[in-house]
Image (cartoon, rainbow, N blue to C red):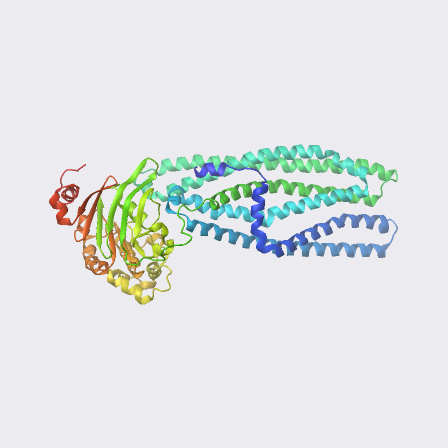
Length: 593
């Protein structure tokens, strides 16, 4: 499902199942939530008293010339204003503080869940979509918790209280006022339908803008190289126009709905003046009651207006919560065993037994692959692009599960290892090095407090990374940009070597690790690697055969199967696939098949 399609799914404006699940996050904060609700009810109750105090002031004191009693009513009215202010202030503080804590907990749960997900999950889910779940979707829930739920609750309580007071004061006049409710319900339902359609269009248009920007900014270099700026700008103009039109339509619906509410409110006031005024002239209704009815009528329509505005908040929150829970309910494809047979790798022997694997059904990448790497042995895996070399590395670290067959480390199936212990024992240096924003030392240490500054320097010196680090301003404390943007490809590769060696893994895997290093740098680290790989099980995946000639054994993959095994000289002597690869790289022979 694409990002745009996910954004189009709105569901109900209120889903009891989702709301119950959302309210579960309030459980640790029951006390502040309870007191926020108490403040809300108290504030609403006190506010409802104010028009009634006006009635008492007119009927009992103004008409009777009781100045002293009028002063007491005025003082009481001021007290209600102070109480309403205090209750609203305390309620706002409590619920917003609670809402921020709930959102923090939810973000932590989402990020914690993402960290448990397998690599295959990230292959299928774009980064932009996952970031939206942690950012804008959580923000939509924050608005629900801090204003939506309590505002709806407050408005409903206010409406109920006003209706009860009006019927208690004069049920005939109250029935006359509420005779316009069918018209109010009709207008509200029409707005609800239109607002829902408008909200879907706005959200879909926004998703398209986000998708376009993510693609265009990421591929900015390609856009400029092929002179596609004008074409991309025209595409964005069209997408941006759709977003503008959707928002303008939403503005139109609100512009029509709110004045209609004002018109209906004015009709209610006209009914009170006409019908209530006649009762007052006939002596059936007091002047104070008539004035109180007018004030209550004005207050009655404000919550209805607020409820219409909260509809969009509820709609957005329910849609966001459904997407968030869909993510949280997705189980990790790779699960650690409940009772692991081993916590970490010992000697480091590796064995693949009849392993089959496919990223997509019906498209096998590995077909009945079997081989063995003895502890301390240095084995190279070579083959054409797409032959399955990097897949073997991923399966070894259990980033994916084998479809068939078994992968053993120290004679134990990798599925029976403690997952963190297994990966901690395998150091992997990839072709595409990922560096984090931070210092050089932080990127070598990666948060491992057991690795001292001396260990960091020693690892950097061993792979000759210290040569360029010492020239940086701040040296090991020098800050590097996002993804190591301030470093060259070769420098990033050297840092990756230093990172792997600093963690002292029992098994070291080099996956095209020297492909971005120039010949001079490769010569510098070759001697260091020979020393470091000694006594350590190592698997070297490479296209450049110059990096694997000194391996104890070379495994040749072709179309997902092991076709040849032997030393460099043995494989050249057979004049098979490896010999053809060698000829292609060093003697310019015609491509082989």
